[in-house]
Image 1: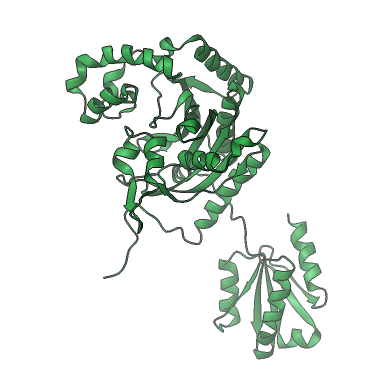
Image 2 (image 1 turned 90 degrees about the horizontal axis):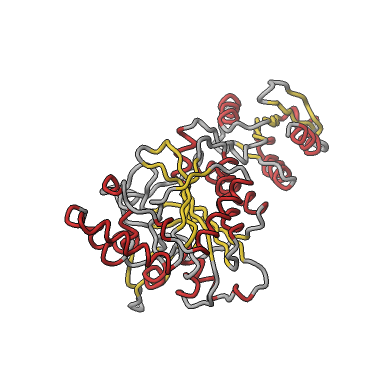
Length: 421
């Protein structure tokens, strides 16, 4: 029986992985412009971290986590999302002691046990940002703008921003009473998950996909916000407006995790079947203290890489190969073949991406290989060229070729390659 990858996972093969590398570089470049710095946290953490940080009433914790006992009989979980681990690291490493706001980003795999479908895997990948140390509405707007700018940098069209305020604990407590009064008459008609959520966290009932049609007339949390929450939300909207970032207010947007306060937001875009959410996040002012740190506000987002790549494919956006081969070295004859290790080393030491045939094939087959690699030049060395101290460079795009002295060919190539940039 042949071995196969686990259900809900994927192999990223050559030809595809280069697209991921380009995608990730776009994220890194954008974060550098916004002055966000990378953080890398463990792929597995204590199960308690996610129970406390994400919330036991969430589907993530109650249904989807990959949890196991290690050899020390400790309960560990493969990370299902990025925020809790980053907050844990922020607290453990006392980053809150730094004088400036901490602006961080991460790129990496997450794990959730759910039914695989288009854009949804059991091992999936996220690009996310987290900001700690500021309650300013302007930082909410900056985080939302960073995500929106990321989609623009990829060339994606039709991205919509939806925002809401889920208030502070006092506002949510006031809303809880209003919402329960609305939900109680229909409780028996709701799914079992919604009935459980009504007892523990009724706001999350509005996040249910099965019963969404029942909540058209649900009361809006915006009507329960106190003055401070209302002012904060108005200032976020004003900042987004001044940046010309289009958004709509969705009063039913609560997100799927328990730690959100104040601003919640999602990025929407068609192109993945019934799924239209390609990223989202929000503010979580109480999470740092909940995980053992001081009272420090936070806000962030997570963007699913697989989902974004599907949207790009749907929109016909071609992803460039970030590292195309520049020279394919072709040797004809034993003496020329003996020279190729040295010549390849010269090319690579000069910063030129180069390769050669290692199967002893004829020139025609080697030229076909050079074409398949989409190399810019073929460098052809036969015994005659070797005796003259030359090598033939053929521009595979233009079809032109010329003989160049071996003492000068590296500089000649660098000149040609730089001229094509």
